[in-house]
Length: 73
Image (cartoon, rainbow, N blue to C red; front, side):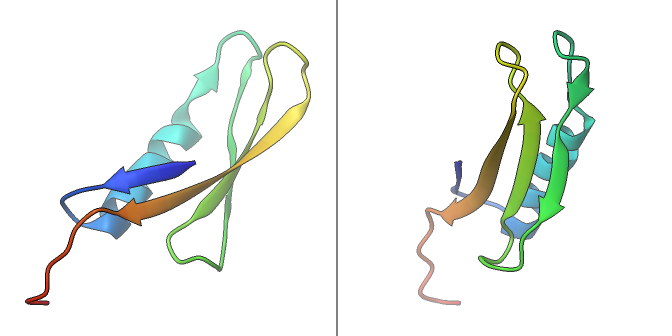
């Protein structure tokens, strides 16, 4: 999953998204996401959840994509 970030602090936004996803509980399945950190690429992480129809685990890689250009930095 690409997470487009236009403004703000990318590490903070990814940490917030990871926290919100970790707190989510799917009421139909009765469980939430399991979060695993990834070393590469930076700031990306992986989540594993149960699919509500099949009951099988599926994995999603969450990766930030910065949409800013600031040549002064």
